[in-house]
Image: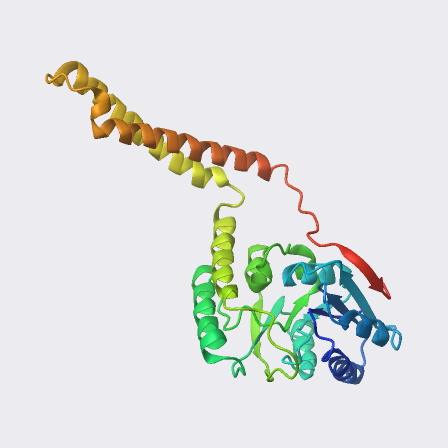
Length: 315
């Protein structure tokens, strides 16, 4: 199997037949062995029926249906788990990604030996206020924190070596940061390719403005996990130790002052230093304990599937 094309979707019944026809025309011209995997992320329209219909017409078509909507990251995880191709290409099902980009993305992995190629929608047909401007800010922040020089981290159309998708683990909304996850896993030969972007033909976008807030929160999480994920004690333990030390020094100062200097008879509990000492020692202990528990959890964690498959075709 040379190529696997993974397509997550949610309520795209009107796009699927046209998309499938275009993809098969493009890939057949390439003359390679391929599979096309559709992951229905709990659609409540007729998307799954359309997938079953087109799967009857070709042995290359596979389908996976989720019991309910679990999100794009989980849909991609299921597709990656099922994929058998040496090269894996992902794209969205809304007809905004152009299937004619497939040969270039495939050759970039096969012939130029890139680990990952991310699409770059240099010219977009999206809302300027709700998508274009927030997307530029989001990508700027991702470049600064990751060090990866990509212009469009969240572009749906990407190509990967098989080793990349089998190594990374997608949880939450981390599909936005697959290039970062790949780099953190040791794959550094990452590039980008300018791709065509088309206006949406059917339906409406499934994402609201809140996706950018969630995206920045996920970016913060990813940065923290990359820096301290394997050594949480280095972060929480350090803060806890500093706070405990501050609290201890304040308590020593209060003790010496009360025994040898203070003559007014004022109670220790009437002094602000007492509450600083108490608060920092309590908080320091909690931070230290958090780091300790994090180390224990890390050594015993097992990542499980976060989705439930209800039906498959041609699997």
